[in-house]
Each structure stands twice: as C-alpha cells, then as structure tokens.
Image (cartoon, rainbow, N blue to C red; front, side, top):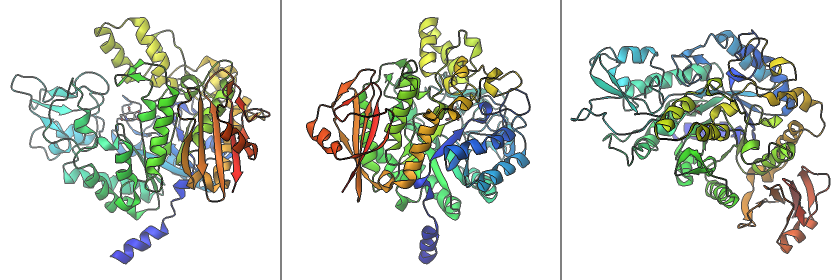
Length: 561
Ligand code: NOJ
C-alpha cells in the first residue's frame, strides 16, 4: 500500500507548477454557426492563436447541458454538451487538437449545486421519500413560518426557496434555479466521483472547481449575523474530509491539475488545501486581492484601491504558501471586471499599464491564469441601459439596491466598475462587424473599443500587449527563480510603487512597477545601487532609468549571484 502510494506520487510531475493557464468563456469566445453564441468549433479554430501566445493549459468554463440561468454554472446534465456549444464529438476533437499542440484542457467542475432542471433535483422535489430527496438540502421553515435561516443569497434574496409540493424549503446559495447539493449524502458523493472519472477517462487534464469550499455546511444551520451565512457554509466542518475522499477516489488516480475556487479562504486555509502532504488540491483561487476595492464586504460599494493593501496581501500569500502549498495568480476571470480598467489606466496608458499589471503578477510564484482578452488589454464596457446587460447577479442586485434606496445612477456606476458582464463581452478578434466574433447577433453587445483593441491589430504590432504576455510566458519557462524563488517585498509603505525581489539559487529578480500616472522617484539608494549591476529582463519602456519610473512603467532586473 505504502509502496503503491509512493510510486503514484513520483509518477506525477507537478507540470502545473511550470504552466500558464488561459481561461475560455465559451459563450463569448468565437461563434462559427452564426447564432451569436461562441461554440466548441470556434475554440478549435483559435487553438493556433493560443499556441502562438505560448500558454500550456486551457481552462474551459462550463459547456455542459444547462438552461443557462447563470451561463452554464447551472448544470442540467453533467455528461452532455449543451447544444449551444456543439456536441461530445466537438469536445473530444477540441481535446485531441489541444493535445496535438501540446496544450492541456481543464474542465470546470460545478458540484456545489446543479440546475433545478437536473434529473436529481426533479426527482428530489417530487416527494419526501423519493430516493433522490437527500441529494439536496431540504428543511422545514422556522416555527414562525420564516425560512430555516436568515442567510442572504450571493445573487440576492433569501438562500431558501419554499416548495409547495412537499412543504419544505431547499437551499440555494446562488440563484433560485441553482439548488445546493447535499454532500453529507455518501451516495451523492459517489455519483459525483463517478462523473469526474467519466471526464478524466476521456483524457481531460484536470478540473477548476467552482466554489468548492462551500460544499460542507454547518449541520446546525444557525442564523448569520446580519444575514451573512458565509461563516456557516465556507470552509465548513467536513470540507477537508470531502476533498481528501475525492482525492483518494478520483484525483490521485490521474496525472492532472486541480484548482479550487475558494471565496473566503485565508492563506492558512490555503495551506491546508494545497499542501501536497494533505492530498487535497494543487492550488486555490483566493479572493482577498479582489476584495480590496470594496467597502464593508459589499462588492458594489466601491472604494479606491490602496496599493499598500494590495502589496501586503500579495506578500502574505507569496510568503505563506512558499515551500508548503502553491498559489494561483490572477487578475481576471469571467466574474471580475477588466484589470486594465480596474487597477490600471484604460485611457492614455492602456497598453503600458496592461503590461505593467501583467509583469507585476507574472513574476510571482504560482500558476498564472490569463482570461480571454486580457492579452489584448480589453477594457470594461459602459452600456447605457440595464437591458443591455445579461448577468443574473447584476440584475438581481439592481432590484435589491433600488429597494434599499440606492439611486439608478449610483447602481449603474457600480456596474460599470464591478459588473461581471465587463468580462463577458465578446472576444475582439478583428475590426470587422461584431469584432469578428459572430456573423449573427451577439448574445451580449460587443465593446465598442474593438475597432482599435483586437487580436488582428495586436498580432500586427511588434510591441503589443499580446507579445508582451508571450515574453512573460517564455520567461517563466526559462528562469527557475520565477517558479522556485522566495519573495521579498520592497518599498513596503510606498503608495505608488510595487517592488519586490525574487530570491533564487543562481539569480535574483527585482521587479519594479509604477501603479500611478505620475513619474515616481525610487526612494531607496540601496535598491538603485543593486539594480545598477543588474540586467534588464523585461520592461514596458525603451530604456528604463534606475532611479525613477515613468507612469505605469515596469521593469524586471536580473541580478546574478
Ligand atoms: C462561481 C462562478 O465563477 C460564477 O460565475 C458562478 O456564478 C458561481 N460560482 C455560481 O456557480
């Protein structure tokens, strides 16, 4: 037994530590059949583009059969491809074509909840003694007739929906049409593991696991303070047991990568989830750096970023996980606004600040994730009317905030800054109509910026953001210090400069990034002296000066030992 375990571990190479992942949101990537919705053949068509960028792994957001209440994060059938995207043959062809180009393919695993149209839920809601009843979380209301707890759903309203048929409530942490699965039920867990094997046996290279730290709930279901149930469903009492079981039953049998989406996980928790000795996951997505521009834990209550907070946050994650677990590195995904509009400058300094942000992230330890269009410096979008938006979270929030007295203008402003649809407008391929995304009517409007921000333009410009990302990816392959070195924060209190040192065996890297639109003097003579002997590895300016950084400048120096 022990021998077998050792053999298993040594045959797995931890290839994901050297990899760069590219996330595809299929609905918005590339449409080939003119229905206005991206599809699997559309992804296959663009594989060479991804190969040119140099990425190693594709993470595909859900393409499973779904009523699309939450763009596929509400799954009706785990083993069927939604007609919108194609069919199983298309997916198998995508996998093969990706593998032919030495790229891996990672699926999205959404197992905290399903769609209410999943056959398990259809059965479960029929009667209290249905064999599938315990696949979901059903409870009686409180004696006073209120829902079982006061928890607020992440998509607004109560987390409980009353079902007349059996006179009980079911739990849904997200939309009403996304009932939570009951992981306490061993039969449910077995079915999930079987489904995971179905995909891995096809040759998939791993899973991104949707809100996976929500699967274990506090069995006493207490009320939350001010309706905040999160302490009772995040990182719950049996989470490590469930993940270890999943690892033993499924993950350990394949040479794959796993990344768990984990809102509310601290570095200490991340260590427990990703320390290889615990046999759980390879890495997690933290949300801490994405929450720094929110007031009172409300993402719509926006405040300006304090760069010192961001630096300290990265320092905490970089140093806590070093030598123990593993970080994932991201600025963007389908739930976040575009980073160049958020922490950069999407006007005069768009290209320069996009490169600076990329540098700052990609020189850290961990596995970097690039979200479609980030490599082009795609920006947030401002639609005039709420009707032009599609996202359920945003629509529900609008109603909720209006009821709380927020003005229309205030809510729209928050949507412009934080709305998820900022990330979901179609990928900008060229300057033809609809950015070359579709010949039909796109399911969500194209960002008008496509006439000057698009892939064709970027591929034709030698110093584009695209080629800058290509260089960063290449550097990760060449320099061991990027994957292995330790992290030391420099200029800790500086409000505009984010500087850090990666310390390796043979070389150190000093990374300097200016997060402001002003020229900034480097206030530390020792730092200036140390980089004088260094060689410039990558920069977004023609000739960096050691003692100052121009607006949004970034420069990385290598210092040999
Ligand atoms: C996190 C996903 O990234 C998001 O898009 C989705 O709405 C929720 N989980 C619910 O599945």
